[in-house]
Image (cartoon, rainbow, N blue to C red):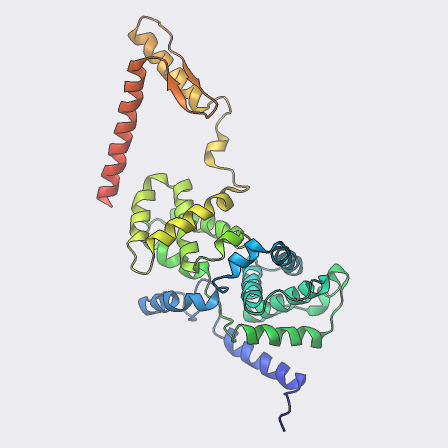
Length: 343
């Protein structure tokens, strides 16, 4: 007669397995090895198995169609953030990865506040064990008015581990950052660090967006880096985009879709370098001053104005101004084309 294993035995096995997993110096940027260098065979493996570490294909669609499911995920993520607020952000990211993979596999559980609190606790606990972070359950048990004993949390951990097939060394967008940055032409460390920092910021924010859950981690990483490059190093964007698109493991069509979906998330709460320009230096005013001074020189002081319609499009009142603007645009297009050919 079959006798299920006791909780004490499962707890012992759980800790033993997680200690083995985390003993390899687990790092989101390099999940499969304990070295800090990425080798070609390691990168190839990441691309091959990355889909095993993301939610099911229809998970994003279900969340979009079911308001309740979307609300449950939002509350569960909020609980994860509350529980893990004193830890490194990468721990929270890992916990949410476990959360999404569990929900996509098992479905949304009972609609009760204590359920997503318990689920959040267990995900954070597992992530902390993987990251070897010092974590005391007693420190956060009182959060939200619910108190769970250690055994209850361990039971939930076992359920999560089973649903995730014990794949705890998650492959995330951070796992592909170094690989894609190697294609960025400027080699100086400050530029690359700035690009990486902005891309990581975008990736952290993107995890909350259900529209991005359907894309592979590698595509999320590539899109975040491209968006960061467009913001910080616009003159390098075309070359960088071409280098990433030429990667044999990257689907160009899916990359474009992911990049488009990421734009709203990337801009949310971000102050562009263009926002620091004086409000009086709007494109219209700058062009107005430019053409007015230019015309004053060429026509003996005849003023030329530029007006806008409701859509913000710039319209010139005289034909030669259109030619001037057209010539300027054509010159810029030619320069961009030359840059792309040089990539």
